[in-house]
Amino acid sequence: MEENVIRINVIQSAMKLGLVFGIFQTVKLALFPLTLQHQIFSLLLMPAVFGSPVILWLIVRRFRESEAAEFFPFIYAWPLTIMTVLFAAVISTVVAYVYLQYVDHGAFVTALAAQIEVSVEAIGQQDPTGEMSAMLSQMDEYLKVLRSMTPIQFSKQVFSIMLFWGNIISVIIAAVTARVRLKTKGQ
Image 1 (cartoon, rainbow, N blue to C red):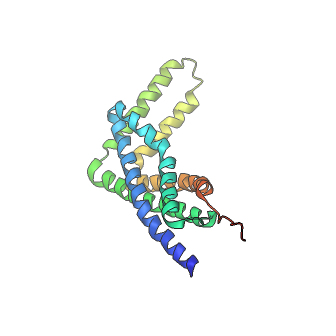
Image 2 (cartoon, rainbow, N blue to C red; image 1 turned 45 degrees about the horizontal axis):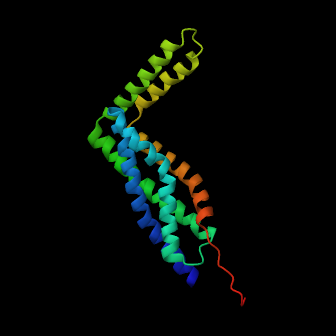
Image 3 (cartoon, rainbow, N blue to C red; image 1 turned 90 degrees about the vertical axis):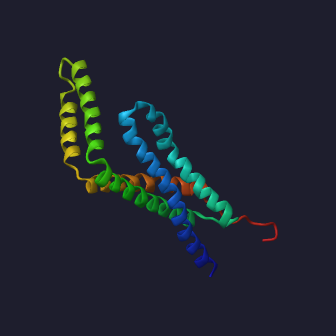
């Protein structure tokens, strides 16, 4: 019976914590188009990108401290972390899709392609021997694919990237936040 209560709390809490983490991820995604227009926003984006695992660790640790007391094994920590990442990915992907479909109208992809083209031109000018031609042709192919993507395809890509890295990070965070029952002297 107690195990069932813990699982219900894990699922319910993962939804709540996923909402919090999803809002953070949405703010992080909103910073990316801003960095294409104004480079100063990259000072906010980089700490947000590298701070995402720390924020997730703080969220899971807070749940452990408030709900699980002495017993929070890896078998409960890992699903909580994965489900938190899943709910956060769903929320931020929906917001990204709505933005790309109804607000942006291609400005994000155009700005991203322009930044990549500037980089390709700079590399091409610095490479008079043509040793970087293979990389430049790959960048041209990437630009073609990027320009051909619809908002739903771009959102699916964002979702799959979040799930991939979220699963890897969730194993590490679950291992760090797991806590086994402490044995007392009488046992």
